[in-house]
Length: 282
Image (cartoon, rainbow, N blue to C red):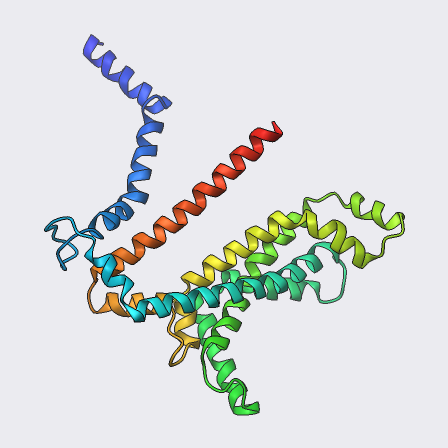
């Protein structure tokens, strides 16, 4: 075998072994994930109304966004819906996760577990249609709800978000040491006291994670919201989707950049807090 062939074989062997393969795969993955986001951020500062043609640097679209009442009202509505939905899902999902983790032999547990986890695997369009039919049937039968609006959106979001919270809470409780709760009851604490004084504080990380996940899912939802919303209850995803169908506007790029900035600041703050907390404990 010639020296050139041996050198080429060595390079390929080193690449496969990970000397170049892992860094290359990492860079390609980062470009694939964050390249479109970076492009969107750059073009949010484009002076031209054509989002694919760069004509100069400008921040005028952020000014247009600040004066767009439709987008601002939809964003405020989405935040209110997301907070209400995440809070409701946290309460219902925590109770469901606690029951599934602590009560393992009651009658109908399999059916209950299936009903709790069904929204996780159910296509959103099926969930949206079923919720719409339920609201229409209730309105015809008892007169409630009187039309579709914010209330129906919140109920629908709670329905599918609580499953994610239940899974997180159940996983947390399954990994907890039950002997701590048993010791508290041996010392005379009642089950309710044990739950609020022992179990609930230990569940706090799972509760925070579940609330944030439910908040993100509710804020981002489009399909289910499209079925259960009505006049005067247009959320931000619905507004963005309607505008994109008519042609992408630079204001949408500016809005997406604002959202990306807020999320990035939140993630960076949380990572910094975890780093400092781990450093102080270490």
